[in-house]
Amino acid sequence: MGFLAALDRGPSARAALEAMSGAPAQVIARAPGRVNLIGEHTDYNGGAVLPVALPHATWAVAAVRTDGRVRVRSLQRRHDEVAVELPSVAACGPGLSPTWAGYAVGVLWTLARAGVPVPGLDLVVDSTVPLGAGLSSSAALECAVGAAVLGVLGRPVAGADADLLVDAAVAAEQQVVGAPTGGMDQAVAVHGRAGHAVHLDFATGAAAARRLVALPLHERGLALLVTDTRVAHALADGGPDAEPVGYAARRADCEEAARLLGVPSLREAVPDAVEALPDGRPRRRARHVVSETARVAAFVAALERDDRRELGRLLAGSHASLRDDMEVSCPELDLAVTAATGAGALGARMTGGGFGGSTVALVDEQSLGQVAAAVDEAFEREGLAAPQHLVVEASDGASWSPV
Image (cartoon, rainbow, N blue to C red; front, side):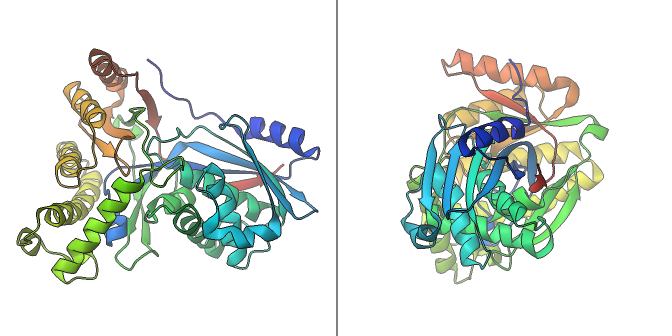
């Protein structure tokens, strides 16, 4: 048993870029993946979420070209390379195939559409964010590439440009790749802060109200253990994070529930009205969103007073709701949660959109090895492939530096 290291992939990406381009790299950009502590399937329903930026990240190394071409190579995809003419990026938009390159080139399209003077580029990307693990490898890729573009233009990832990057990454995922996700992943990939979770409230729509919540885990002798079950999930056909029917169907169910309740979003729904809904499936989806939004507020309050029993209870309640009402868990996720809590974790739940992916457990630091070993043993007993574990410390969001 081991833990996936958050290695710096900048040097490997830089070497590959200079070999591909024959010219020196100009900018190295980085954007993290994320794990969501609590608040699942609430962002697109006007609710609140509480994600943390991972130490595991995607790097994008860039050099400007003068011929108007864009070349993007991934060191994770057997050195796959995609080349397009820059003028064609503006025309590709929603017609671009939803492969890994759609996330990267899609950001160039959305930035250019927003008025950013995107130049011709050579780009090489590399990452330590596990693909298909529900840890937002797609948003990390989008935001790393977008940060690299800002870097070659000499524009810091701050202020209005940080918000521009979030919007461009969300638009790339929704409009180019076709994944009907909310804006949580991109917001935390840009606005994450070391030592903090990011509370995002989507009550006003895509432009979430944002505030930092202190997460002094190490000072309290605690740690976050993320377990990638190796059951790959997906949010759009062909993308690194994609399940077209499941995720889109859950979103449609929530929209139908809001329509039946006569509210603009499930954020405005109240429990009594939800339970009065005649149709079982919309009722279950609405029950999850209403209860999960309440759990986010309670979780923040429990963090502030260091109420570990309550934190564990809320994590367990979130998982049960996602399993039973949202119906987005799977046997491997349930097994990882049960094994972790049985081995002494304070609480655990599935994290991300579901249908596979990862769990997150709150554990005493001294119990990390014990809890991870118990999960491994449970998977072995069931004849499942060994899961992969990450120890998470809240990290900073997207940035770039000159080479």
